[in-house]
Figure 1 (cartoon, rainbow, N blue to C red):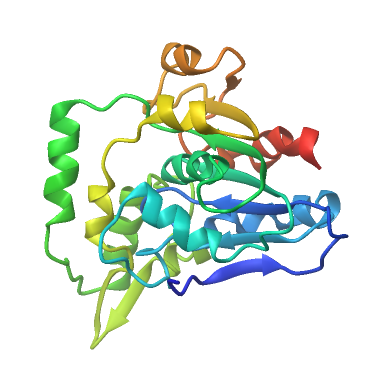
Figure 2: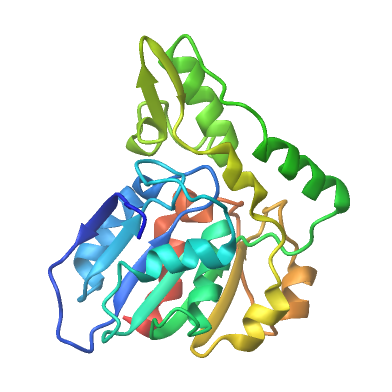
Amino acid sequence: MADVRLIQDDAGGDGESPTLLLLHGLGANGAVWQRWRPYLDEHWAGRWLAPDLPGHGGATPLPRYTFGALASSLADLLDRDRPVVVLGHSLGGVIALALASGWFGVRVRAAIGLGIKVQWSADELAKAGALAHRPVTWFDSYEAAAERCLRVSGLAGLLPPDDPAVSSGIVAHDGRWRLAMENAAFGVGEPDLSGLLAAARGRVVLARGEHDAMVTDEQLARLSSSAVNLIGLGHNAHVEDPSAVSALLAPFV
């Protein structure tokens, strides 16, 4: 099992209260869910977890990044006897669908995928593959590393450089700074969304921000007739407006 740094609340609920698993996107980390605490404190009765994905933040890297390996590492964090609701953003949304398959021994009651990129061109996959083999870039200042961290995670303009989600994504060593994220994670590849949706055992909700350039309404509609469009929001809708995105959890509270 990979070490996974957690932001969590173990307050509990009874044995059937679902655990809420919040999964960040590529380049981000679990601290991106910090601003959800007021909602969770008020509305979520059970345990909730917001882990760093392997190769991100304080989590241990994987030998090889696949959706299955990522899902397996997270399944080890969960009580197999308690149902789970998973809300994942982008890469985290794909992992949510993988967990919902039941292949990893997790009882997923509902999987919510926000801002999942549905279509990949050959050029996009080639670029991601090249980034996966790129050597680590070191920066001479925290500010420069923070700027890169915000761009890689798509959070530029949404969070300040001193936000916990930024500082948790940066590692300092001998007076220099680098991103905590392993470049190899870019090589995770293109998900088989149709296959994952077909395999899902629990309820699945797909959603996107209205202005998300990563995925269109038409693309989601081909996968789900009940896809949700979040008006006025972009790719990182969960950061832009936690209350709007947390409303997706209402049927499962």
